[in-house]
Length: 256
Image (cartoon, rainbow, N blue to C red; front, side):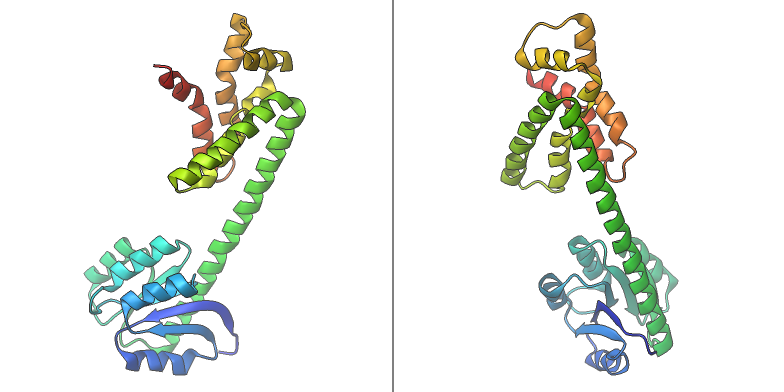
């Protein structure tokens, strides 16, 4: 195989002879890192990763391949996992695929061409995953920028309110060490997005504490749903849209 792949590949097997064989055959084609201890493999993944592809033996002392690959997926969901085992047992294969999110299952002794093809396919899968993430990230970033600009131009009072909420939310998220912190921060920044449908003078009255008419109260009450409708179809924004939709209900509960 003439083509060389720069994506990093981690192979774990407690049999050093097998690892040496992989190194000898594939070192010119793949960017290999081999280790014979599953616990050390996790440390290496944390220190040197992420790895595009992780190949693990099924049966190893201290930790089996399923547990190891589950841990790898916790560290990086994009890594593509391959299971290597001497068990020609379909039940073992099904369990490994279901529990460990395995991309391929290879039976030892594995032919060079079979392993090579599996590694190439796994790298291509990793490239597809990361390319999709990059596209989604650009789409998401662009959508948020456009929406915040629209809010700032059409209703600067609501925009400034949302920006203050976002600043507080960012501090709270850091203090509480919440996962997926970006969702909370964006939900706060876009929390007043639905106000673009409300007249500026009504928003001014609302934030100033001036008594509203019944019609104005109705408009204020529905702005979270408007924000939800604007966001729900944007990739990866479903959770953010739901947070925005529920904001008035949360505030209502806090009053009691």
